[in-house]
Image (cartoon, rainbow, N blue to C red):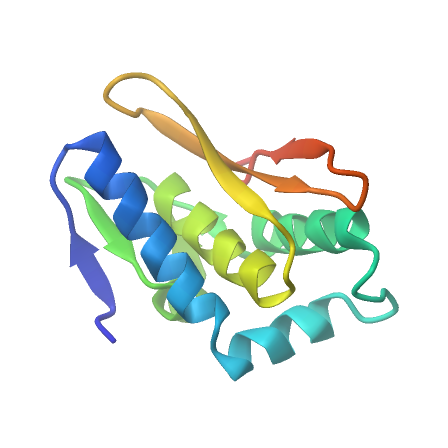
Amino acid sequence: MQRVYTTSNDDRSKLRLMSEIAIAYGGLPWFRSLSARICEGLNGYQRGLVGERLCSWVRDTIRYWREAGEQLQTPLQTLRERFGDCDDLVILAGALLASADVPWRFAYRGTPIDHIWIECQDERGKWKAFELTA
């Protein structure tokens, strides 16, 4: 798989590509193992706590860094570099959430999109937003 993707400024195609990258990486056994290690002490039925732990881990482990132009890093590249912009952070979080079978979605502001964050669903069906650039 590529390490960096370039994308157009079309929001729908960008969001679709970001989702495809997150889902593809979330299906890798290595990501399942990483999410299980991050969530040690929790069980898979605790979706809300698992989602919160994974998103907090991304926020606390990966440094936010702006970029010139628009590129999308793969989750592995973001893990290797330990930095990324908001797109890169939500792709990584989406991959981890997907690997743990926690429902997730991107949320954003602006047209065109000028900031993006992630939301995940708990076991009761409630959505919770996570800002990863803090």
